[in-house]
Length: 69
Figure 1 (tube, rainbow, N blue to C red):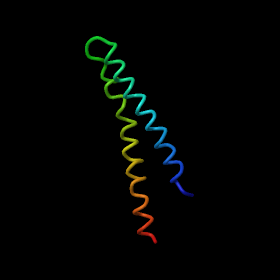
Figure 2 (spheres, one colour):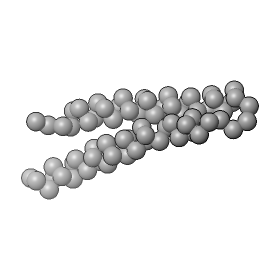
Figure 3 (cartoon, rainbow, N blue to C red):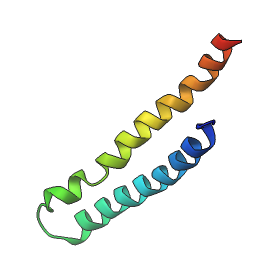
Figure 4 (cartoon, rainbow, N blue to C red):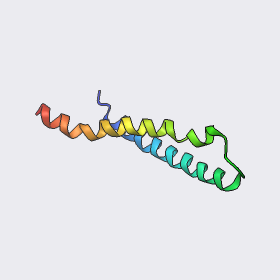
């Protein structure tokens, strides 16, 4: 079974989730006076790490395929 398709699709959805969390972060910082709660600040980090790992996998795919053939 090839994991390329599901990982590529999840990478797209996670990138949209990351964009929404960053936008939410800016909106909260603009509307709430003072420093917002730490969870708002750190909310984009989990999707960012998932994007890092899936992006590195997708980046390495052509090199792995070239080494196999």
